[in-house]
Image 1 (cartoon, rainbow, N blue to C red):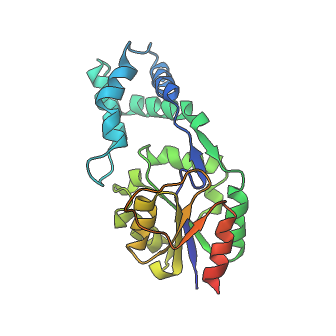
Image 2 (image 1 turned 180 degrees about the horizontal axis):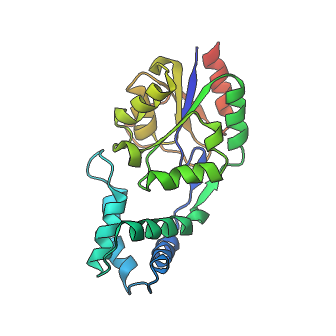
Length: 236
């Protein structure tokens, strides 16, 4: 039997569309929030010195993005206090809004699962401050459809580290064997969830991760609504 379904956020419920131009737009918005003109060459320096640390962390421990931003600003001669840093981060995050596109059937899928009495969770790797990410969920109408939502920036560890899954399952009060995890990444989502004994479903509607040697999912779903068929099979 099944008691809960947990999802990854990016490329599962929401498609994250990286656009290089948004990196510069985000920095420009941040400087405007500080009442300053953008520092010439800031985006190029950030891309060379700081972006690799954010996209390819050396360990599963999540990076402290606000600290990285403060450091990068300081290296450009811009010292910011805590309140100014918040203003910068909020403006930068808002500038990236075009990259966050909710899948058209996300609400319908979550509503259908909740209608079956299942508990719903979200477990996602994300470097942005948690207060901004939870605000996104509220604005997109997703937060009200979830029983728990966790991001690596608030847990301190990235999937496939078990801490992410264990905390979510604990808050839901569900044993791993009675939960299904749905995500696009074979290593992070499928491997991490399966390592705890959860059933797994690879989401293929936005991207198809086929990394060599990666863990195999129990199920594959080509559309969001295919998840309902997986749930029916596991609920028998």
